[in-house]
Image (cartoon, rainbow, N blue to C red; front, side, top):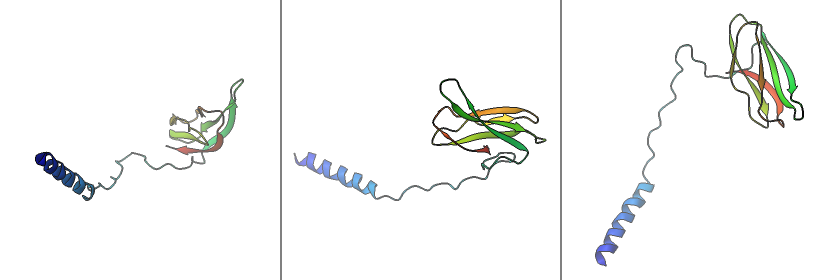
Length: 113
C-alpha cells in the first residue's frame, strides 16, 4: 500500500508541475512570398458589381461582377449573417457570379482574395 501511495504522490507532483510550466515559444508570422496575396481589400474601381437574387422558390443573394481591369482579379462576395462566396478568378472583360449558399444572408461587399 505504501508503494502505491508514494507512486501516486510522485505522479501527481510531476503532473501538477507540468501545469505551471511556461508555454512554448510561438513563431512570428512570416512575410508573404513574392506574388502571394494575403491581405483582403475592397474590389478595385475597375470592377463593376451588381447585386442579384437567384432562385425560384427560395431567393439566394449574390453579386454579378464584371472585370473591366487589364489584369485578372480574384474576387469574393461577402455576406452579412452567413457564408461568403468562394474566391473566384475573373479574367479581364469577363463576368462571374458570386453567390452565398444561404438564402437569409444580407449583402455586404465584394473584396479581393
